[in-house]
Image (tube, rainbow, N blue to C red; front, top):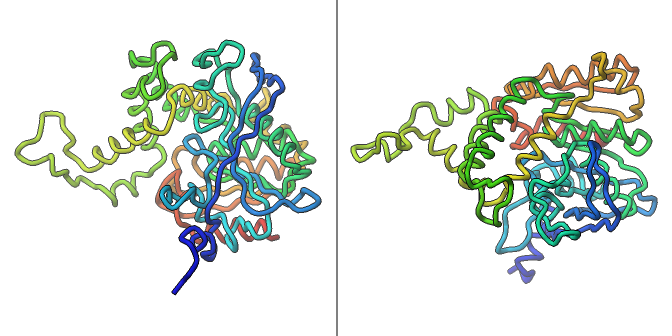
Length: 382
């Protein structure tokens, strides 16, 4: 019989980070945003796994996507046993091996899960920032992360790893801090969003802004533009999937509501029910104003020079880079990922492109994917 407590048992399972807790880093200095505006101080909520070595150079930074947060591995308690969003890739013996590396993940600046964002209280006014929060960019997120890493004693990043918006952050890291980052792994990402991707973001923001509950951005916690945010999430979630995966999972299957007692415009198809569930669950964990700020940061991200020379932007890069695209990703399709590597190679940098044939769309980097694990693990170990 195992005499270990449930907490000790879970923490000791092979490959699992186990029980983790978040911490808050408070920067008491004013933070100036790239496009103007400042805040007197800020907080980043973060988690760490593994141990920082004496030289401070064995750290890997994990950057989350739009709807992610700092909790990317392990569990918070027996009662809250939901694993972090990238638990399948982070842990002892896993591709991001916490037995070797000190892994850090923070909720981005502008976020709504402990980090300073629109819903946070402005210490100068005593009221939430709401829509007075300064315009946010990917570069702002990275500069805030650098202050956190300095606080933790990280002298150099062994790697920065991220997908989607996290991949954008990884790319920004190697440009802004070329002497600080040894390796970069960017998954399902892009140097700049296409007009179609910007259009989807614009419609999502419009759903929020036109919801009377938005009230110019001033709404109480738990209230606000829930209908608009739910619709925005439903539409965005479609872009994270693929036609093939949706067809295989749902097809034209009907719900139980589709029987004799159905309403005129009720939830007749299972895919409708799935999207409504996604929308409803999202409003319970995400802030509408943060959604507005994050999607705008995605739209503004553009690594191309005014003359259209991506390789010129990459001239300062010193990191080794792995970019991974997914065949079914139509939000940031393979060619956009491949363009990153072509530009890096033209700039004379060490870069590799890998393309995985997966059918789950943009979110393929988040699911169980042994081939991806081998790629990432091999690159980090090389």
